[in-house]
Image 1 (spheres, rainbow, N blue to C red):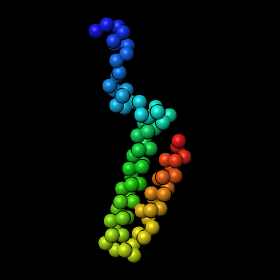
Image 2 (cartoon, one colour; image 1 turned 135 degrees about the horizontal axis):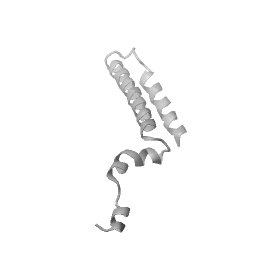
Image 3 (cartoon, one colour; image 1 turned 60 degrees about the vertical axis):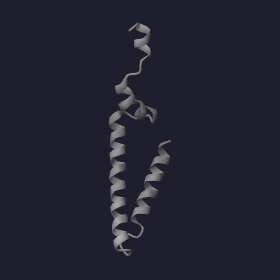
Length: 78
């Protein structure tokens, strides 16, 4: 492989782990923290929706409130 081909080849590690976090101006670990926090909130919202499905009087606005907060959080990042 020539030097030209080597320098233009994409680094698969960077492609998988670094390119997207960099595109939103975050490090890998900053992006991981944000995504894990987001996943946790989605899990809580899903659980509240499941509870509400079985007991309609419970968790009436919990899932929608969490989703609105998450939406606002994403909108403020861009």
